[in-house]
Structure formats: structure tokens, C-alpha cells
Image (cartoon, rainbow, N blue to C red):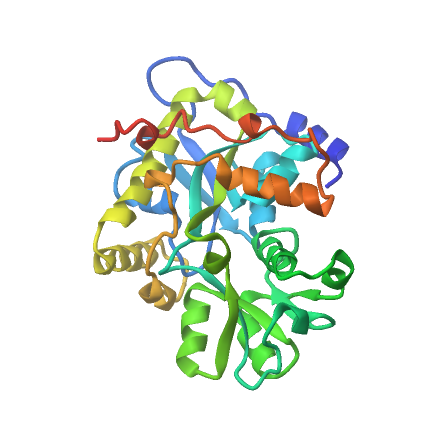
Length: 331
């Protein structure tokens, strides 16, 4: 959405002033979910951390960029995406602020970039002129792939010859095995199931490139934060405690809780995928955001020419002020 239209939508969709007082200013938060999965706010609600604040599910998101766009334009109250996508949306004038990290990569949960066992592709240079499947453009996977190619010595002209093909994640494995893709992005349960079937090998992984890192953040509109500081604090604290719960509980307990939540919410979903859950992937305790988690992508977007120097300031992108783990005072 062009920045002028985006800002107009933000003005039109701004929320009314909340009531003053000790309790939450607003007690209903609209959000998008993910089929067959449990988000941290849904877990927080189930654990009782949200108190009087209720969640209203308005549907499922199609991608991180779409999710934060919906939050920025007032269709939902919060959304999450890859930090690079947050930076780009902020750069075009969207008054959003990241308040907590919510997904990432570690040695248990990561994204891999796979080829068939019999593929001649062995190096980054072998990808020139080839097709790589990704779930969406302008987000996590595009950034990781291009950073891999750059680190391996490809010139900007050579990188442009590597074709990124948007394909639903559920279709990536089949397209790869049928030869419609030369390489494909796989993560989570889709990666684990594909590797169980054999015949694929990793070319590289995001955690190999960057080490363990939190990759995405949840954003709120700045006007929402200003008008609803108590609701914001309740929401972020509950979110942080839900992340910390998964970081400190046995995997089996987390998976069992996820299954119960999916069964109770009655959306006619398949809960098979949660059995493959291994970790949150979030590096910071309770989702505390580190500046480098944004600075890495500010630098990358600048090198790519997608933002100009001064388009965004690190201090404007995120805050940890509502996160109880930022000062170690969570109870």
C-alpha cells in the first residue's frame, strides 16, 4: 500500500480514546491466527495471563507482512512479522512499534533451504539461474537467501538471476521433488515431515548464517499504545509470560497444552503439526528485543537499496518498556 494511502487508512481507523482508570482501557483485542497452531496470545489467554483482556479471532493470516499491515491499518489490534518487514513498513510512514519478539531460529527450530539429494546444486553459485521457493517476498526467507548469496561472493547481478518463486509452504516439498523448484524453503513441521521421507539435503540454514536469533516481532500502533497504556502492558506482560512458559516447561507439556487449546476452540483444525513443536526459537527471555535483531536488517535493507539512510531510527522501531523480563522483574 502506498504510504499516502496507508497513513490515510491509519487516520480513518484510529481507535477512540480509552477510559482512564486502573484497569485496561480496552478489553478486547482483535487478531489473526494460524490454522493448526497456537499463537502466544492464545496460550497466554488459556494460561489466564490476560486477565480481563479478551482475544477476538478475526481469521487466519496469510503472511507476516499481511499481518502487520492489518494491524497498521486498524483491521486488527496487533500483528507479527519478520523484523525486516517491520522496518520497511515503518520506513513508509506507518506509526507502528515492536513490543516483543515472537519467533526465531535456534538449534531445535530453524528454517532450511533444501535441494534434492540428486541435485547438482552444491554451492551458492550453482543457484544462478535457478528457482527457489519461498512463502512470500519481502520477508524472512528472501532476506536470508540474499544474505547467503552475498556472503558466498555472488555479485548483485548474479543475485538478481536467482529467481524467488512464491509458493504456499504446504506445496514446497512436492514442487521440489517434482522438479518444479530447484531449491525450497522448509521450516517447522513441514521440514520435519519432508526430512522423515528422505531424499532431500540442506544447502544451508538460517541458524548457520546468523546463529540463534529472534527473527520477528509483534507490533502495535503507536496511537493504540498512547491511548491504552494499561491494556498494552497487560498484553505484553501476558505475551512475555507465555513465551517464558514455553521456554521453561518440558516439551511434552507444551505440546499437550497446544493440543487442548486447538481442541477447545472449535475451528475444525488438524492438530497434527503441534506434535512436531520443538522450541519457541525466541532468543531473549520472554521475548525481550535486542537492538541487533533490528540493526542487522536495517543494514541489510540499506545495502539492498530498499531503504535510504535516515528512513528509520533504531530507537523508533521497538520498545521493551512493557516487558517484565527486560528488567528481570517478572513474577
